[in-house]
Image (cartoon, rainbow, N blue to C red):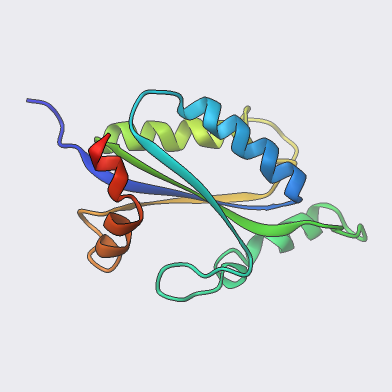
Length: 146
């Protein structure tokens, strides 16, 4: 019996410069490849999470983490961004994709120093998240036709 296929959205919050985000997104695109249908988008700190919570509030630990790791250093042009990746996949594939995307930000999970770009991640499942189902189905409608 094959695992059921569903719609998932992987969210990766980062506290980074626009240049860092461009590089991260390019590496994410390469990582996603052709395994499953996917769609990638980026929103900035002016945006809100589904339900209305501002990204700056949802990811409030990221600027603090950066400041704690770089005391007295000006953060410059760093801002909160959220990379949103919709995938049509099994739960196992979605989890694997999420892990692979995290390796873009943190290639060595056992390293001693902090990651150069503070990050946080989560994954929404359209089948299990009743509050987000309609939003995800609308946002990623084209993925089901691929």
